[in-house]
Length: 163
Image 1 (spheres, rainbow, N blue to C red):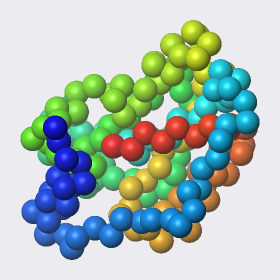
Image 2 (spheres, rainbow, N blue to C red):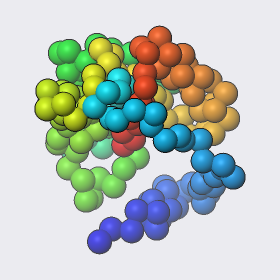
Image 3 (tube, rainbow, N blue to C red):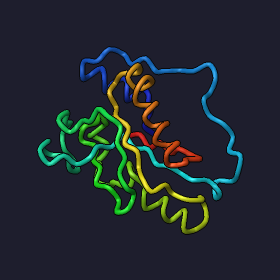
Image 4 (cartoon, rainbow, N blue to C red):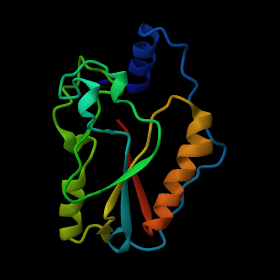
C-alpha cells in the first residue's frame, strides 16, 4: 500500500521544497445532490495540460517538464477527446508510468457511464485547471474561472480529476 500524503511530503522534500501546508476548511464546501446522479450534468475538470509542441518531451515517462506548465484555466470540447498531458506535474515517476491518459482524463469512461444511464449528461467541454502551487492564486483566480465555466456549462456536478 502506498501512503499518499507521506510519499508526497517525502517527494517534495527531496526536491528541496518546504513542508506543504495542506489547505483545510472548518466547513466542507460540498452539498448533497438534489437529484440522482443519472439526472445530473457532469463537467470534467482536469489538471492535465494541453500538448505544447514547442515544450519538449511530454509523453509517457517524460521527466518533469516545467515548459509544459500552464497558468490560466482553459476549456476544450470533450469530443474528440483532447490530447492532454501530465509531464508538467511533479508526480511519483518511479511508481507511475503515466502511459494511460484515461487516468487523468476519463472522458471515455464518463461517456460510457452516460450511455448506461449512470450519469445524466457529460458536458460538451472539459475544464483545464492549473496547478500553480499557490493557494492564493487558486482561490482568488482559478476557482473563480472554473465556477464561471461551470455556470456557463450549466454544471450540476463538477468532477475534479487531479494528477
